Amino acid sequence: MPSVETESTGGLLFYRGEIAGRAVVVARSGMGRVRTLQTVGQMLGRYSPRTLLICGFAGGLSETQAPGDIVVTGSLRDAAPLDTRPTAQPDPALVAKTETVHVAGVTCRICGLLTYPSIAQSARHKREIATLYPGSLAMDMETAGAAGVAAEAGTPWIGIRAISDGINDDLPLDFSGMINDETGEVSVGRIVLAALLHPWKIPDLARLGGRAGLAARNLASFVESYVIAIE
Figure 1 (tube, rainbow, N blue to C red):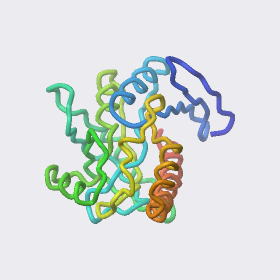
Figure 2: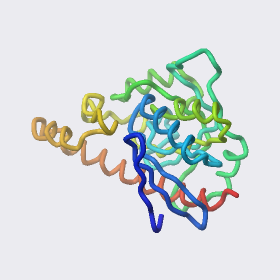
Figure 3: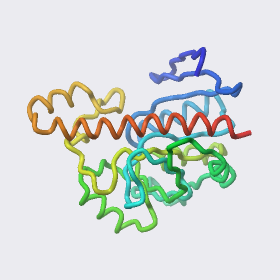
C-alpha cells in the first residue's frame, strides 16, 4: 500500500493505506486464537471496517492442496470452540467474488477450513486431523476466533489463506515452542539457535522457507487483486 500510516493502540500496530482508492487497515495478530480475538476486537471497534479479510498461512489437509495454493474459506469448522454457539460462517457474496479473481500462476480453491488449537508438526498428524474432520481441506489457528468477533459485530468476513505446507510435509522443528509471547509470531532467533544445534535440519528449514516465501507472494497478489475486485 502506498503512503502507509502506522497507528499504535492497545499495544497493537495498525497500518492504514489505500489499494486502488479503497481505504484499507492491516494488522498482524500473530498466531493463535487469543491474540486474534484481541486484534480483531480492537480493529472493529476503532475502524468499523465494511469487510474483514482474515488472511495468512494454512496447512494442507488434502492431496489437492499444494504449497503456494490459495484457499478461500467456503465453510469453517472449529476444533476447539469457546462456547456452544454455532461457528460463524463466511459471507457467501464475498466468497463468490473470489471466483472472479485470477492471478497468473496461482491456483485458488474454495474449500472447508478447520481452525485447530495447535500446530500440526508432522504429516502423520495432519492425516489424523483430516480423518477426524472430513471435508476440511486446510487448517489454521486463527480464523474461527476472528470470525466469531466479526459475527458478533455484524461485520461480513472472508478467510483467504495460502498453503505453506502440504499434507505430506513434516515441519523440520517444533515451532510451537518457538513463539514469541509478545508478538505471537515465531522467533527468528530461536529458529537460528535450533538450526545451529541441529545443523542437519538446515536443508529442511530452507525448503520450508522457500514454500513459505511462495505462499506469501501468492497471498499478497491474490488479496490485492481481491480488494480491487470487491465493490
